[in-house]
Image 1 (spheres, helix red, strand yellow):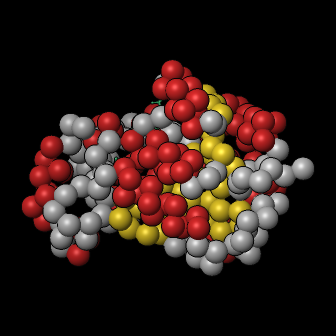
Image 2 (tube, protein in one colour; image 1 turned 90 degrees about the vertical axis):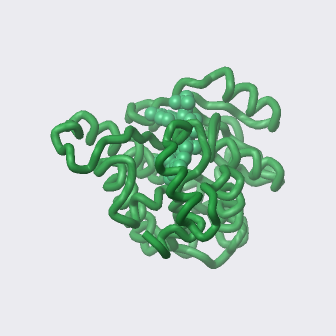
Length: 246
Ligand SMILES: NC(=O)c1ccc[n+]([C@@H]2O[C@H](COP(=O)([O-])OP(=O)(O)OC[C@H]3O[C@@H](n4cnc5c(N)ncnc54)[C@H](OP(=O)(O)O)[C@@H]3O)[C@@H](O)[C@H]2O)c1
């Protein structure tokens, strides 16, 4: 029997953008599944505070990824919203091709592209069963770097560009039962970008909004994409307008 409240799984939700999303969903009445790779204590504390479930799984490991959705269904018996937020990035100068090794490419693609694909695949039957208006919903957190020829490294930008395209292909394939959208943030103040002072300066000087995003700015947009019952196949750039100038 389905419970009265929908269930949302947010990958990488012990920090930064993912934590803001999971907190927003809890405020919106969802039962939440908090997930991370290593930060178990933080995950348990957030899940406890929000009355949700915490799952630990390294998304670079296919067998760990395969275990995630079954554990959600064991606990709650349903899954209505999947947010593929977890991602990794390591700055590599774009003109230093040798610095982006095959191992760098594989790890970035594993975590940023293939793991979201595997999670969409295993979540699909449950998402198709969601009775929510507008059906089940997937939101992929990609990046401005997947839309503009920029970003912390070429492998990172390519992984996010690929996920943007997968978003559109899945939206076309899975409607009307499941909607699929992406949020492509520019610079967001999170632990990942703590030391990116030069980029922060560019945002403050050049973006019409004159600041990087806050994690809550992204969470608000994700919540709207999930709440909307018609929108699908969109990649929404959330960069404070920087793309108008660069
Ligand atoms: N911050 C930005 O400016 C920005 C801009 C555009 C797009 N994004 C995208 O937004 C998403 C969130 O970024 P953020 O800045 O909020 O990152 P963050 O603060 O570094 O948090 C990353 C989260 O993902 C988890 N994670 C990392 N690697 C993982 C793995 N192999 N398996 C499972 N979980 C893993 C982390 O768990 P552990 O701590 O346990 O490793 C953590 O919960 C990423 O996809 C990123 O590419 C960020």
